[in-house]
Length: 343
Ligand SMILES: [Ca+2]
Ligand SMILES: [Ca+2]
Ligand SMILES: [Ca+2]
Image 1 (cartoon, helix red, strand yellow):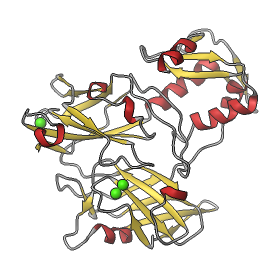
Image 2 (cartoon, protein in one colour):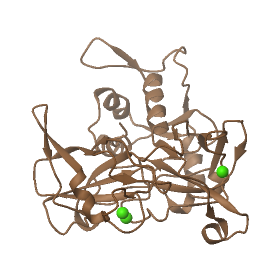
Image 3 (cartoon, rainbow, N blue to C red):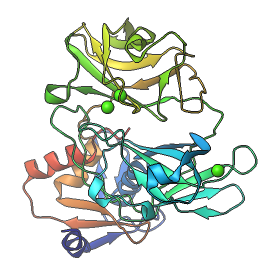
Image 4 (spheres, rainbow, N blue to C red):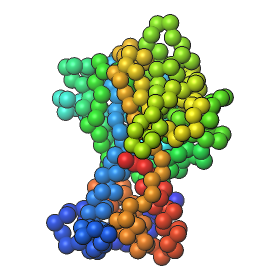
């Protein structure tokens, strides 16, 4: 299937170099002009933004025999966080390289989507291996160097997705060992994925490292009281405290917050010093916008009504564009998914 995809992909190659003659000009309602090449640069950046962060969670603290089924000693643990869910069947340890501050390149011993591998999750890969040493030689960059694919979201997730090959994207947003966790993703959850037993609106949040209660007497079920959801009333944010919390006690980095309000929650915050990572570092105050599918912008409509389909190129930093003879509504629907709230 993937080979087929590649086969059909190479019809037009647009350069990402803005200095080149734009192959197509489109106008929006203002007087500004955009080129197809500029738009592709934007798309390239949005694909790059799919990889949000890596989190140096534990340094020489995890047993390789138990976690990787290999006797190589005590390992570092590093969750790597994506905005889109990943296709587990395309995931392997050779999809990743970790660069430390001395310039050494490390390949993980093993990788896993577990424990955050329920339907509606699958956005965090746990890398296990030797990635450096806290303070003196920490990991500074994580690269995707193999064909690792995102996958479609499930019905009930407010974010929509598309199948994208992430090969070639990198992040230097590597959170140091001593830092606490922060929120990297939130979306509304409906239907079968909703684990709340009460309330009228469920928001799923994800942390960039695994979290457990920081306050010694708390259990995970107590954590709802430190979260705040915000609805937007003509630009004024109205706070709402969840009535309970779900998706707890499963050792992952996801929570579901159960709200009694039917006002649309657009942002979530968490008070400082309420959760900690596996290294026992507490969180700072953290906030995140609730993601959802976003409508096409005028420039995107102009580009895609002409029938182009876009794929990242697995073998270079260029993007391939295929001119497709599809009808307008099909293209719009695909694009609506493809541009799914990567902002
Ligand atoms: Ca280490
Ligand atoms: Ca879970
Ligand atoms: Ca959980």
